[in-house]
Length: 281
Length: 231
Image 1 (cartoon, chains in turn orange, red):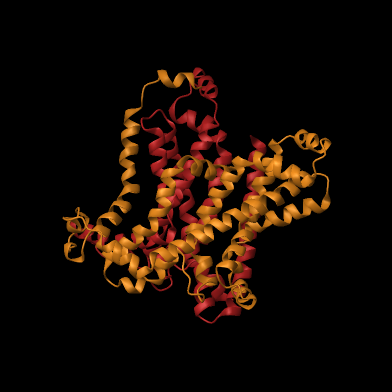
Image 2 (image 1 turned 30 degrees about the vertical axis):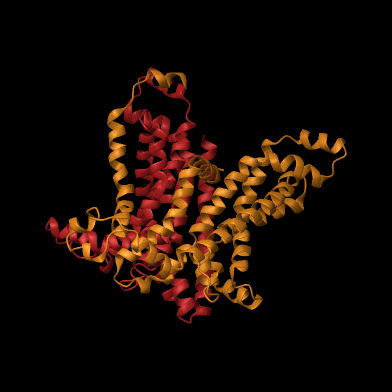
C-alpha cells in the first residue's frame, strides 16, 4: 500500500480543485481579518470597498475591542473553565472507565452502571436546561464552579465509553504481574494503567477542550447572574455595545477566534486524531 | 400542546430534513479528493478542518454580516433581485442561511471522518476490482461505499443530532425570526422558558423533545447495528 505512493504521480487537477475549494473556508476568515483592520470611514458602501485590503495597518480596533469586551478577563475565565474541566475529566473519567471496563463483563452492577452512564449521551442539554438553572441557583453554584461540575458530568458518557473501550487494548497480564509483585489496585492504576492510557487521554482532552471552549449555551443560562463571561459569551453580551461599528465587532470576533486557531496550528495532528478517535469509537 | 408540536417543527425540521444528505455528499466528495494522490495533502486536510474548531456563535456573527451586507451587495452588482435583499429577513429563506452556516462547520467534521474511513479500505481490494474490470463509478458504488458504510452511519447520526440541537447559529443569525421561521427546539425552550416566563410549559416541551430524541437514537442505533452485520 505504501510502496506504490512514491511511484504514482501527483493528481494535479484534484489538487487545484481542492485549493480552489479552500476559498469557501478562507473567505469568511479573510473577510473577518480585513474588516477588523479597517476603520469605519474606509468601509464605503460597495462590496469591493468592504473587501479591499486596508490602506493603513492599525491595531486600534483590537485595543478598543479588548477594552470594551474586557478581553483578558473573559479569556482567563475561558482558560480556567476549560483547563479545570479537562484535568478533572481525565482523572475522574479514566478512573470510572477503568473500574467499569475491567468489571463490566462479570458483574451485573458494573454492567448496569456502564449502560446507565453511557445512555446519558442521548440527553441533550436543552432538555436539562430548565431544571438545572433552578438547581444550580438554589445550590449556590450558578457560577464557574457549577459550570465545571456540569461539564464534567456532560462529558462523562462519551469519555467513559472511550476509556473503557481503550482498556481492551491493555492486556490483563500487566495488572496480574503487578498484583503478584504486591501492588494494590490503586498503585497498579496510577503506575501502570494511567500512563498506558496516554493516547486516550489526548483524545479525551481534545474533545472535552473543544467542546467546553466553544460552548455558549451552558454558561449563558447558568452563569448569566454571576457577572462572569467566557470568551464566546462576551461576544454576545457586548453585541449591543458594538452598535453599527462593525470594524470593532469584527476585531472582537477575531480576538475570540485567535486562541483556538493558534492552539489548532500548534497541535493540529493531535486534534485531528482526537476528533476522529472520539467520533469513530 | 398543539403549539408544542408545531413550533419545533418549523426550524428544526427544515434543517434536519435537507441537510444531512447534502452535507454528507459534499463531505464524501471532499474526502475522496483529499485522500487521492495530491500535493500538500496534510496542509489541505488541516485547512479544511479549520471551520470545525471555531466557535459556532462567533462564526454565526461573521456570517450574519455576510448575509446582511456582502451578499445583497453582490446581488445588486449582478442585478439579481432574489439576492439583493437580505436572506435573514425573509421568512422563507432564513433557514437556508442557517443551514449554510451549520454546513460550513459540519462538512469539516464529516470530511475528516470520511478520510479516516477511506484509509481503512485496503489497496488490494481496489487492485482486485480493477483486475475484474471495475472502474470509476462502479468501483465507488460496489467497493468503496459499502466498505465505508459504518462511517456514513456515524456521519449521519452526528449530522442529524447537530442539526436538531442547533442553537448558537440561530442565536447569532436570526434569534428565531423572522416570524419564528427559524426557531429550533433548543432555542424555543431557551427563549420562552428563560425570558418568556413559560418555565413549566417549556419543561413539558423538553420532556416531549426527550422522547423524540430517544426515538431517533433508538432508530439510528437499530440501523447502525443492522448495517454492521452486513459487513
